[in-house]
Picture 1 (cartoon, rainbow, N blue to C red):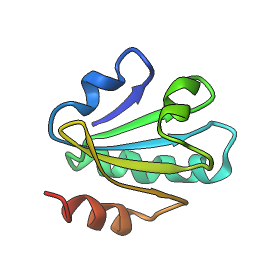
Picture 2: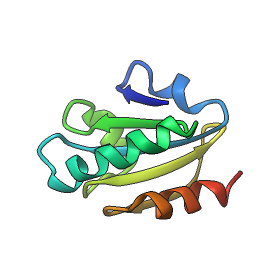
Picture 3: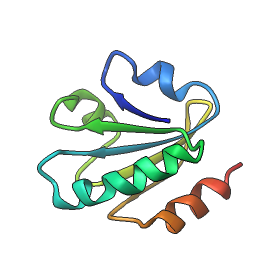
Picture 4: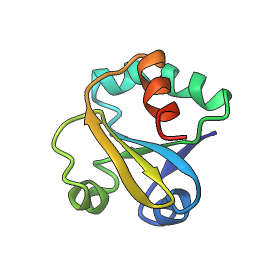
Length: 100
């Protein structure tokens, strides 16, 4: 499932299970390129959240987001890993499966 996140629904999204969240922007070319990868993973029951950092600046600031795309993998609300830059499907899947 690919869910668009903001300040209102972020905490409830990450509190249960393993969730991959991408911070990005619609004007970021790499973020736009990442979109079909995220959609494909979401169709395979990977829980993914997407945040437009310009529309949710308090969340971007809270997690120290300085470049796009930045991914944070949460497990029951706690950060297990954080990384930046475009990733293909297999790289993202390998990272998520490592923490299951």
